[in-house]
Length: 162
Image 1 (cartoon, rainbow, N blue to C red):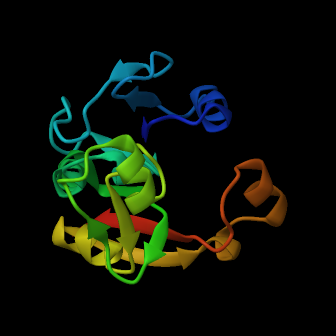
Image 2: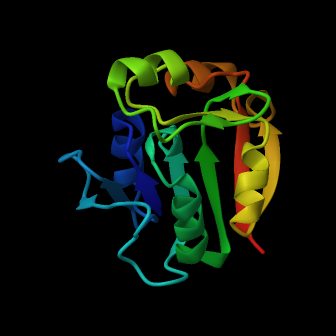
């Protein structure tokens, strides 16, 4: 399993599982097991059975390249959950906006480079994935939603390789 930008509460639980080969990765978090730029993943094709990446792609300049990299390193039997906040009907991005205060105004946070829209699913499909959009409440209990700090109105983007 590849866990990108590992959340502490999940990393602790996942890294302790006996039947899971777990790898956490981040571009600048020293708590991660490896340093990784998700637009240029240093692992061979078809390496990971599971990829979990939550609320990272809105920080990545070339998110489409990162999605293609996730597709490349995912096994054909594997699956990925690639979460982003969906805030608009159509994704809004402007690479000319580089000032943190302007990014905060445009994208809601100073370190975001876009606001995703309902077309996010199509971006994943364009990267090669089959995508199943699932309501959080269909698969996660209320107490788990609170424990994991998941927005219960956020859909889960469950991706498999074509």
